[in-house]
Length: 117
Image (cartoon, rainbow, N blue to C red):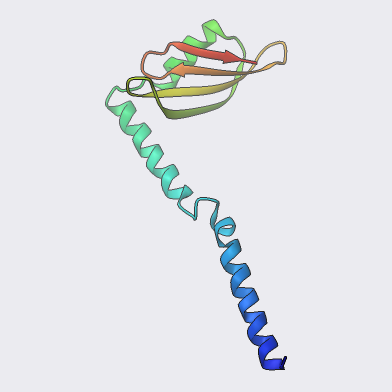
């Protein structure tokens, strides 16, 4: 093996590693996560503007009556329902006794769907 072959081999190795690591360097989704997050944000804003979902302030008011505690995280997701897709607010609530609760709320009707410890 000559020095030239070693250089070519090292270039090939670097290229192979670069290609292998590219998805992780760009994000597991190939760099499209930022675009998807902005797109999801726009979809959520449109759903609120069209009255498809209730405002988060209304959801939090309703949930506070049923599940006391401090809301520490809120996510809005569109899940596949049995008949049609539905918007769901997912809340993490720190209960007064220190438990971390995960609560799902129908974003359209404000109805509590699930509460887990």
